Length: 297
Image 1 (cartoon, rainbow, N blue to C red):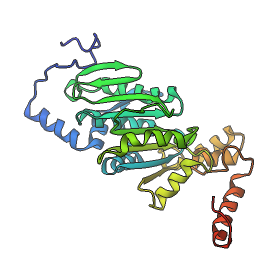
Image 2 (image 1 turned 90 degrees about the vertical axis):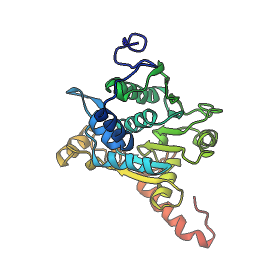
Image 3 (image 1 turned 135 degrees about the horizontal axis):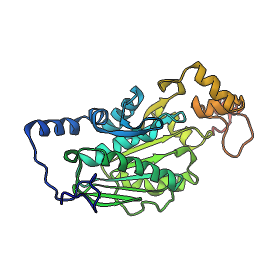
Image 4 (image 1 turned 60 degrees about the horizontal axis):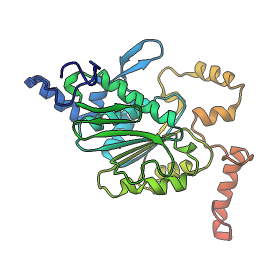
């Protein structure tokens, strides 16, 4: 049993016993109760320059973790390269380690994106001490199954992705880029809507005034039951005016591109050539004149 799952010494085998001490048990319970403490002290991530390093959570990553821990639905609007995938990984890993018989589904507009989140979950899992791991029963690119009855599935945002499955935690990545969203969401939402403790976490950068814009707008106005978190470029430590100038230059001084990718602005919509500023003006004008016979879109 000690050689690890299928010979992988970094993975705990199902049924493998741990010698618990009072201090170890106390630490385990502390991790179980506090996902932020667990992430800061035991999760490791790959740094582009330094390799495998401890996960130093930024304040907004802590906020996201708190919100999805305390609430059922959270929408996160985020700038590029702000660590949303790492945050989701930490939340998912804690969820499956310290619960029983729960299923997490990771869905993204592209299969590679969902498998990237899964790969990060697996890497962080392998870096944990054995006493924090659950025994592994299945371990492949698209599925993890643990001895506590929890599993993680990864797939694309097709309407049949998780149809018929019972999902306790649904993570949707790059929601703004999901095509055929209405059909997709109508198919997958019933998988989590029947439970009283099921959770939905969605993250994305903007992509026009589409379905994700509508969800974020409702979350900000507190009209749709979603908690809201917004991560701007300057919220990321190390990004200053010099960084902004270099990034704008790299984008060939495309201010609208920077506004969308890093300032979380919903500019225009897919399928229209109207500028974002003009479209927002039109949308506001339509809303103002709604009572005068106009239709609000």
